[in-house]
Length: 151
Image (cartoon, rainbow, N blue to C red):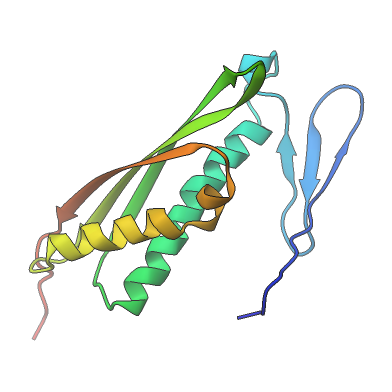
């Protein structure tokens, strides 16, 4: 792992009308535009959807890292985040992120450990912790059927 501090660079190109293009070295470009709520087309990633997506992605990757460290067996995770944009003290900003995480685990895994890892992921997700907004975690754990092993 690289030492801190680390820098992440992103460039965006745009013209007066139409979509913008977000780029970062070694990554595929992303077409962005204003969201429908700001009179945009609603068919492109926007800064708002990218931010909410960053919260969800960071949560999942943080969960994965913590689960590996504590040797938690799991077979899948799905994270859905709703970000609330509101006006506070005459400033429009995100005020809340509702994180809904669904984790599937093999039979026999202690769900209390899964909840603990999910809570630690929420507490340590660097994107959420870097934002000035309330974060709320909603959890769901399901147990998968045993996998038949051919002998």
